[in-house]
Image (cartoon, rainbow, N blue to C red; front, side):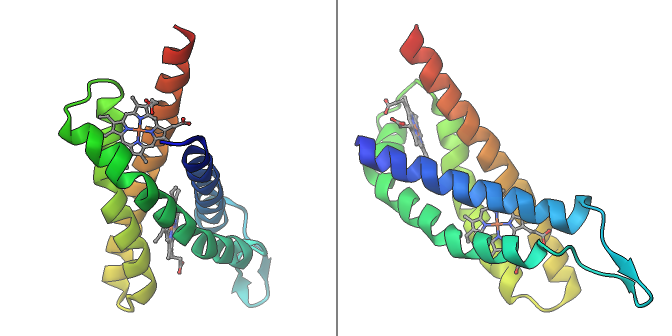
Length: 143
Ligand code: HEM
Ligand code: HEM
């Protein structure tokens, strides 16, 4: 992987990861404003949702960029280093992307609930695996 490809990937992961976590916070964790009409939505919810949806294609592009020469090549050649987190990154990618889009086009509440769980679960795992994948790399460089 070239330096530029790695940097694009890191930037995309940071943008999509941070906006996704921030959107999650506005949906489920933050204190929501209330008035005489009941509980409202967080004032930043729309902004984070828009940034998340707009930055998501950059991560899909970055993943495609390194798929053949990095991820698939290493899986095929039985590369040992960083294998577990690499395979976790590769296998969570598709359900993470699909569930994101399915969440947007689903109307029935049961399907929205299913895709919400699949998206939050797979993207949380992907983000964790990404962090460990990079941590292993810096640890190996120092050793
Ligand atoms: C780093 C990884 C990511 C994290 C942490 C993350 C997190 C989240 C969270 C928490 C939600 C809200 C789910 C809910 O309603 O409770 C969401 C929604 C969404 N995500 Fe992601 N996501 C990530 C990656 C992606 C990717 C790669 C895509 C590309 C397709 C994507 C597309 C979407 C879309 C379209 C929505 C629905 C927005 C809406 O209409 O409410 N996400 N994401
Ligand atoms: C879609 C899946 C994958 C993604 C998104 C991914 C992403 C990355 C990124 C961004 C780097 C850092 C490059 C840098 O900053 O120089 C990296 C390094 C590395 N990855 Fe992956 N990776 C994936 C799959 C794999 C697999 C399957 C393996 C091994 C079986 C693997 C092994 C490594 C190793 C050994 C490094 C250290 C630096 C190097 O030799 O290039 N990765 N990966």
